[in-house]
Length: 184
Image (tube, rainbow, N blue to C red; front, side):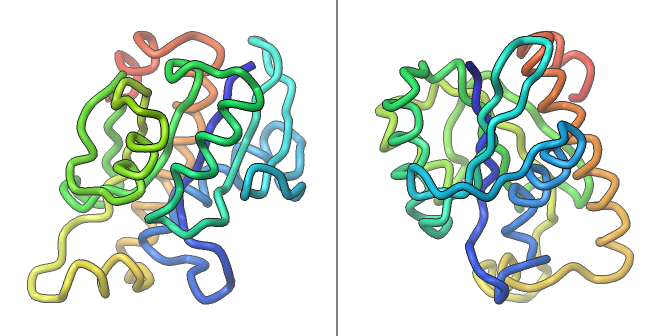
C-alpha cells in the first residue's frame, strides 16, 4: 500500500484557494482512478484506489493545513506505512505558478503543513510534491495563500494540477527516481 496526501483546508470557504491545490490534485487523481474520496477516517476524507502497484490511499486531511501531520501520522500508523510510502502534495510560495518540484525528502521550507507532517512522523524523509503558487509582491503571505487565483494564474495551476496528478501516479507505479526524472 502507498498513500498520497493532498494538503489543504477543509470547507467551502477555502475551495479554490492557493493553499488548497493539494486537495485539487487528490480530487483529480480520484476521478482518474474512478474512486471517491469521501470516507471519514484518520481525521481526513479518504478513498482507496487500485493501481498497477496495488492499493493507493488518497487522503485530504480535514485538520486544517497547520495540523495536517495529525492525519498523516494516524493513517501511516494504522496502515503500517513507512515515510517512503507516503507522498505529500502541497502548494509552494517559492515556485512560480504552475511549476512542480518533487523531492525524496527535505525541509519544510517554511510550509507549516509540511512542518506538521515532519513533526508528526518524526522525520523529513518522506517524498513531497510541491506546486508553485508564486509569492505576492506586497500582500501578506497568509492572506495570499488563502485567496483565489487570478484568471491567468488559474490556467497555469489547472495545468499543473493535471501534471501533479500524473506525477503522483508515476510515483506510485514507477517510484520516486523515475518520477523526479520525468517531472522536475
